[in-house]
Length: 342
Image (tube, rainbow, N blue to C red; front, top):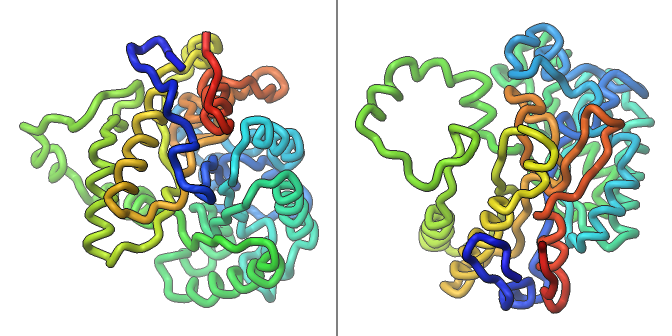
């Protein structure tokens, strides 16, 4: 399959990976679900932050509706099945099932039912759910009561939240992630400002590693992934590894440009190659998840950038439009890997 970049991947597809290797896509509750103040859900710190400080978001947006996954999940699962995804990584909104953040504040039965319905829909379509307990959307009540993760009181409440999830969903969910990117949450939410002039001073004569992208803080460097995987094998006695997200973003400068995402195809091809290379060195990688399935709310960048395999038209009823990368991924995941992208 030639993709117009001087690269040819005719013989590279999922067949070079072992049976049982999971190819998936990833998401998170606040970035996807919408229904932020509906059906019994309590506010999260991101609900509060985006409404109180809209100027902190590049396009002054929020996740009130986002991709409206709460109401459109069946449509999206059909798209996942169409592509041929093995798995889907998603998170549970803490404040959707515990609106006040604590068990003694009551359990939202509608929230429990929502996640039960999603998990059942995924499994009925042959898609394995991987579930993150905390993807940065702390219940606002816990932030108000004891400043959230700055207090050790959060430990018991997080344990109760986790236990509730295991009780309600554990019969079907066999892969759990406790906290998404704890470093990013801690550094971005609490510690980033402490860097002051230290980082610029350290970086004054530095040269970025990798190829630049349309987002200034992202560079493409597959070799770095390989080195990290091999290092992890040696340092931590060769654990089983799932790469729970990797992807490339671009600025939304028009629908057609955004949909013809040859650079994203190239990104995934090179990174999948890198993973296969690491596997041949004995690294036990068992799955990789693209970030993300849909364009979504990207925190401080709002909807100005997109990582998705599917373009979401936020100005036109949230219509999902497959990018070329979605079509490529479908071909890659087919048994033969055959197919052309014009």
